[in-house]
Length: 66
Image (cartoon, rainbow, N blue to C red):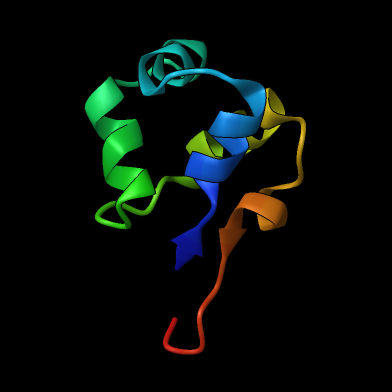
């Protein structure tokens, strides 16, 4: 799965730390998601989408290999 979280965060003009605080995770977790090293849980993906005011599928995209 890939994502465009970094772009969405830039649009909102918030840091990884800001987003992490809003969704109750560490900044390192947000970094790992953006780097495609960690796939968030459904709950976390929904929280991130809510902060970004987007649908989950607008941020997280399935690849053919998923």
